[in-house]
Length: 437
Image: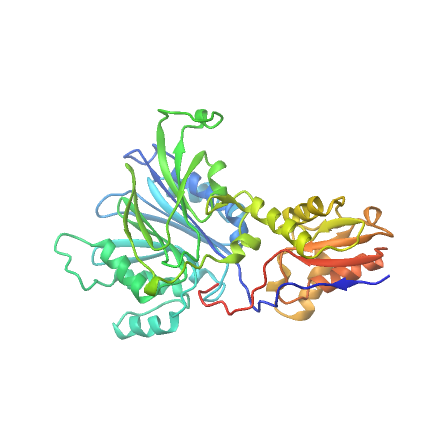
């Protein structure tokens, strides 16, 4: 009648959610050739798992000087983006959007992205996923230049640094490669960026590749059901934190940005402008938590589907930490592929033992211990008929503070589980997180 906990990951402290960025450029020359605002709305909806605090969208008519159309609000995309907002945003034929979880700066409308500023070269808009490792130092640098800051977000720092004229001369207009390189040299991590200026979106990934970013091609919807379709009209180009957003908008995955890459996207397509190297030949540092739970399972990272990676982790876990048990189950939902992999490798049946209330947020970001523990009770119900009197292997994706797993074990034991064996699919995280959240 024992319960055992084999914890393979250390408490990771205050791990935080990643924001989502999304951009779209129509291949047509006039607003209305493609409903860019609607495409961005669908793209952000597909990235909603990356942040639920606020939504922002900026579109542009692509002319010089550009006219920007902006909508920002606190809440979910489906709750705060309505037809009256899209009507104004549809005046643009390219744009960027952002869905936010606050890692730097307070959770309020003032910190909602994208940020829009007027510069010597016209308006720019910037959407940022990540957190600058040297934000405090950069804040002082910007203030010493006499630039006032209106928010507590490090994303505004990025916007203001891009607005500063770089050391190189700009006799023939803005040198965006020089401006972006100047920013990347000042802060190597951690970010993926979308920068909107006139008729162009610049997509940027930090030199360590800590945050994901990928490009897709928009096709006519009639071609979406075929495989290997050629000579199909390209309606536009999209760039997103995750490839999972492409299917819902009628886009095909092209490729990920390389770490340190600067890509220019216009109505005619995309080109790589530069790749900023890492210092001292340092290895890349893609965030492991993208694989563990940030990303949606159908997203592609580094040529492999997140779902498949999680399932392989479960199979390896069964090889390294077998146990005599009757059933395998999951702490839904991001651990489910790992649990299926464990069950397959161990030759045990997979059953569901927990029923998740999808309207309760992640418990580790609640304000205090009492609220986190109460949230666990609100978040899960038990399916006792599936496990009463049995020994359970319960697979979780990770253990951060450890305040979620203990109440879950109690729920299962009180509902009749004979034994509960915890297995953690995430590899151990024994070192400090040096590249931001």
